[in-house]
Length: 360
Image 1: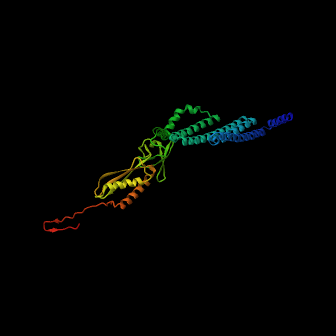
Image 2: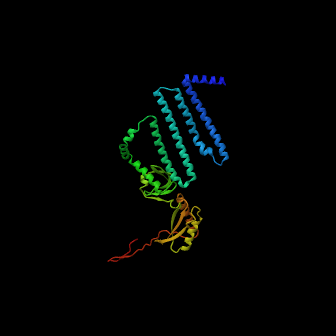
Image 3: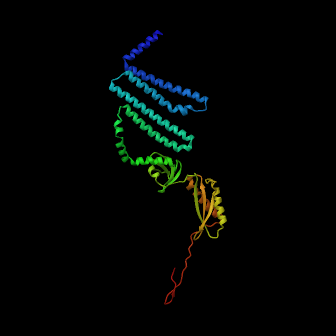
């Protein structure tokens, strides 16, 4: 035992004399400690998850394993710098650098954990998806601002002048970034009013139609049926008329207009249109499809088939299928869709010197 203590004292003396060598030993020791902690956490929580019906390793341990390793390793680097006792100026630089790297790594992993947690939360609570997504965006902004403030403090940057001139700076920012501020406020209005949510099909006042794929802090992204992405500032979205085809019900009403010849059996026409609607599996069973006799045309009787698509995205395809089926059924049942008809009357014109007939 005494030999071991003497050997340990000798090692300590050598590390004290050769401080940079001691710093390397400390760094290596904490690197080993970080790996041991990672393996230990993995095994411990795998054992616990085996006893309980809960995946600790995937849901709890996996997102924090790398941050824990990084914190332990950087702590070792910090202690190594203290052991090496460099010059005051160089010491400040090294310490500030290590602290900055530590803050950046922690911020990076916190951002990833926030994103992963919000995705898991959305999966279990789909009704709160928009609220979670909005809070995630604000959380990222807050994390970024907080990280910048901490980094400035680490490097001894005095923020008092910034705070003292906050009034002037805020006015300058408000003038220079008024559009950005308007978009942020517009995003808050969209979040509070909820005229649409992600996944809804909307029609803008300017005529664009598509599915809402994202509602960000500054803009809303819409994907059209041509797979084109439209980015619209939230200030515009909150101040324009928006038709939401997915609300208050997710289904979408379809109008199919058709004209039949005078003399057609209107009961048969109505039954044929309803049969076509009932045969289409993409239409909602409730509300039930209905047929309306709209008006008398110049050369036809105007009917309209009213039915509801289960998904607004299927509107174009369903209209195509219904038109094909109606045309085939009408041909099979001898229901005629007339061409426009005009009657031309030719009159004889009688002059003072005689009578003659003009060609039509």
